Image (cartoon, rainbow, N blue to C red; front, side):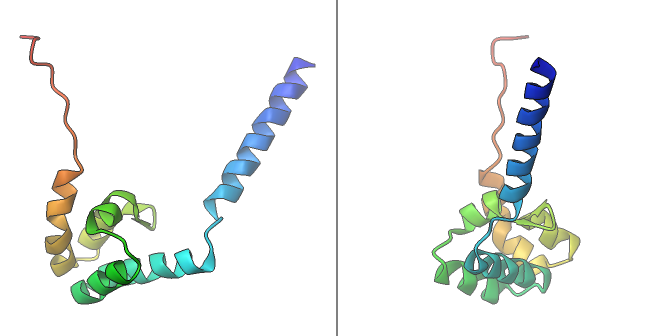
Length: 105
């Protein structure tokens, strides 16, 4: 009884996760497609206009946008989009958090 209940719960969780991956509305999909295309093509001005038109900050784009499973800045780096990387690099540095123990020797 417990095994079938666990199996059913796992199947339900996996199906919910799989459906959540592709639950973008067409509008959001188009924004993400334009953002990733501008980053890949090294179109700094086009990326800026797309983000501004959709009320997305550069910080939010750096923190949350994934292109082909990679963060936006990493995707631009891999595409050799130097202008876009230079534009987004300051926001990438802000989002990194480091925790250090000051008491331990």
